[in-house]
Amino acid sequence: MATEIEKTDAQWREELTPEQYAVLRQAGTERAFTGKYWDAHEDGMYRCAGCGAELFSSDTKFESGSGWPSFTEPAFAANVETKQDVSHGMIRTEVLCKRCGGHLGHVFPDGPREAGGLRYCINSAALDLETK
Image 1: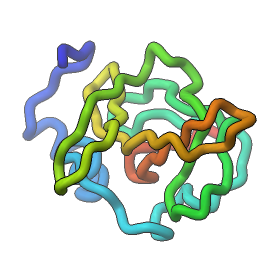
Image 2: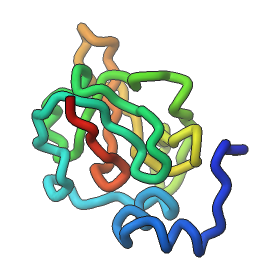
Image 3: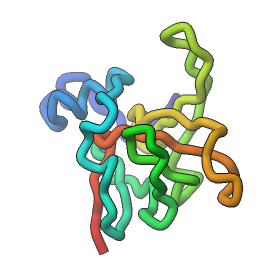
Image 4: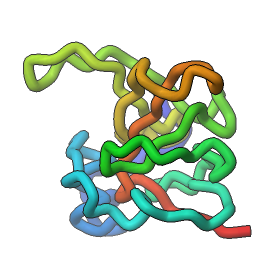
């Protein structure tokens, strides 16, 4: 995937916390119910912790019970990209920041029906909340 922001591995390691690096650059997953935004209720815009791209609005955040921040849709579809993920013996749809290529989480078809049926299950470590 060609991205707008290209950095070396050393640059990413220097700029990100170890947890952010593990999630954004190594497609890691934080443990459920441990991230700082899984139970956040503030209004604002969730941005990519790697590059600052606007990803998800608090208006689309919902309580999924999964232990990760869950959203019904991206704030700007052009800022995210999805691809098939066949790791860990499963077939899932990975969600990436289109601007920097950072791994954000996965999208599942078990979200609220009235909002389109999708659940963007996103790692808190991949996000920075800019409150209103």
